[in-house]
Image 1 (cartoon, rainbow, N blue to C red):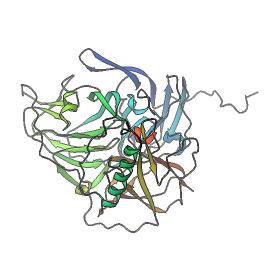
Image 2 (cartoon, helix red, strand yellow):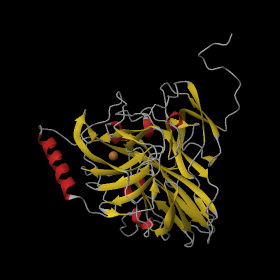
Image 3 (cartoon, protein in one colour):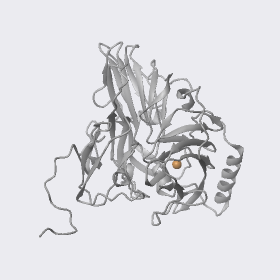
Image 4 (cartoon, rainbow, N blue to C red):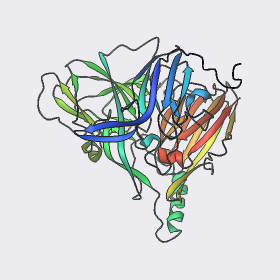
Length: 468
Ligand SMILES: [Cu+2]
């Protein structure tokens, strides 16, 4: 008799890809090994090349002692696959396995990463090495390049400090909303006045910075030839940091943001990526030499956030030159001729910081409410097929990389300036600014929406949509 109610132990077809979550060693520098949780024992996890629309089977083994979630960031997949317990995706049990079968889409640069709460435990969640790139090949592939290079930016050895947060004044338009600023500053003053010794909430810093798991100067350089067009697929795999990247003497032609082709590819001297953002950009190699491609922050670059680019035949020490000040403006890549139709409905979100309110960590609220993991009921109900506008108003001075699961949204307003045509799944929301994005609710079930900064999402900065 078959054992009713238990999955049959029928022989299964082999998976297309197998991922093992477990402890791995990452050699970040000469004789400097880190031990952290990784995919397949390495960092970054293996590049998964998938085909848009062609079903794929992935076996995910969890060799750790705690349940895990693997999130397919930027893909339009069902709740059972997506990898977020808040939506109802089953956990990959400790010392167990889950097989997921789904159809990859949309085409472009995606990634996979853990989606468990770290809280104050800096070994867990995306503070670990659980990040890997995904490239979904579409039917039409832009071909104006000679080869591809994947770069995953990631820090290790995190620590907590209470010094207050880093200035992140990098966006254009730069203008804060005076109303939001007034509110945010009043709340901070009130908090700091509450009692003697009241401090600012915890922030995370790091001791080690890497690209593809190696500190600047360690391992092989990126070897190029004069005249070569290299397509860089850059992924910010950080748990908490926004990153920049520049290659002195060269420009990046940005062709895709978060994997989605932009309506207006444009040249920029610097890339800026909020946590979990991706940029695909072509660099024409026309300045022979040995160069440091690295982060603009001198300390972070010195501690490893960079990679050497070496032309054939060139010798000497890698050179770095700080680029002229440059603000990141998504509108540069937008469609100037497009106007966006009004949505069926607009959802207003006021984002606020409750300074050091949760055991020294900042608590984050959307419309006055911190996300409650125990509750898991929808904050907003959506009708399938309707188009919604999210109006995110940031009453804090922090920059937030805002992420919507299982959907792609269009940037429609940045700090009061209308825009159209840029499709993304993460958008940087500047301090005391407002950003609007539009999307069609075309995925039934629960959809998580959150700030991708691990400390922010873990301390309240999440919400749930339910589409029926
Ligand atoms: Cu945030």
